[in-house]
Image 1 (cartoon, one colour):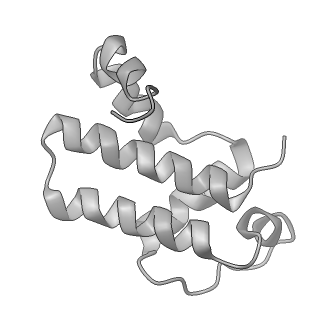
Image 2 (cartoon, helix red, strand yellow):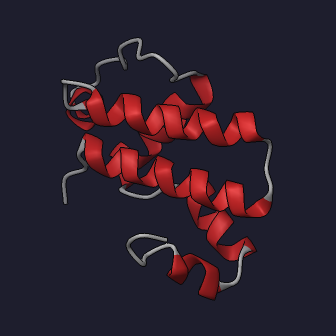
Length: 102
């Protein structure tokens, strides 16, 4: 299943939510939220660029670490960091995040 910028942005938003629940550094949470916004608003298909072997363009708020996660998501459809966060938190908390408006 192809990965779109909106999918990558949603993963970064979910990471930000889980980090916030864990009480992580607010700057780190904000970095993921900003990255989600930047990727979601970006006009070119990032996974398509990666599939063609092209380098990721410079995107505001996307450093080396987040670029690596974009590559992982584009290539596998998953993010190991997000999966780790899910394992660290009770399943009920991650289910609550799926309820609109919370």
